[in-house]
Length: 254
Ligand SMILES: NC(=O)c1ccc[n+]([C@@H]2O[C@H](COP(=O)([O-])OP(=O)(O)OC[C@H]3O[C@@H](n4cnc5c(N)ncnc54)[C@H](O)[C@@H]3O)[C@@H](O)[C@H]2O)c1
Image 1: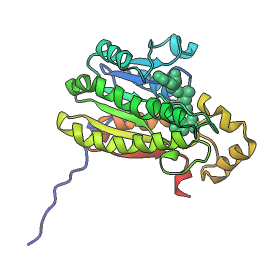
Image 2 (image 1 turned 90 degrees about the vertical axis):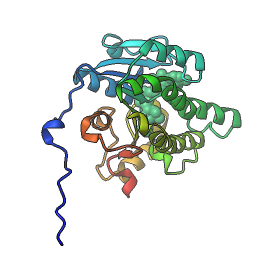
Image 3 (image 1 turned 90 degrees about the horizontal axis):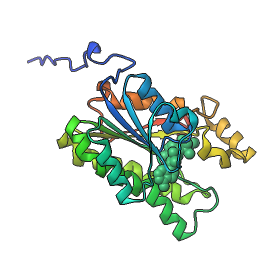
């Protein structure tokens, strides 16, 4: 007896590209410095969304200040995160971009713990705080991991441990919140030209080594990450949860 399998491919008309986010409310935590978070915030705004951004600084870069509602928020503070979530209310997307790393200074246990608190626990804190707001809209979370979630880094051990934790936590939250209609995914950027990577890029051998190993032959720009964020938040990714999407010019496949 032959079995006829019905097509389960999505209807292209239901998944327009680029996706539009008119009427959607997005929060990008860690978008103050013109880096990856800022690029993601601009991409969502270009696609019609209302975008809230945060950062650790009193004010964001001018390019972000003129476009977005900004909240200075330390992700290690339960109270600050709770206040932000309360003010944000119902949300369609949370993007967790806040992170720190200080190359060469992460073996000291106290600082190691601090990096974990910002990068890993901070992402959990933000996700937990806005979970009711995401459930109200069957929204999604996008966490930002890193190549160092999978590769060792002798100069950034806390950062690597935190990002491995982010990738793993993404899977756990995806299962925990699937019943609420909340999808949870991550993006693992390759090496991107931002404020955070300045110290690494000051090491000529390191900078050249990344370029040489990357099949596409260059460091990424913040805008290289934005398309993946729009995709993961769009209806086209409606059956994707718990995934970690590498956006790395091929760095991780070599
Ligand atoms: N640049 C890269 O090569 C690269 C590669 C992989 C992953 N990433 C990740 O991308 C994300 C964005 O980084 P970026 O490179 O654009 O750097 P960035 O410096 O532009 O952004 C970091 C953001 O984190 C915020 N932040 C730092 N400490 C905070 C705290 N305690 N509380 C709240 N916010 C805090 C900063 O205010 C800033 O907005 C980070 O998660 C980073 O780890 C970056």
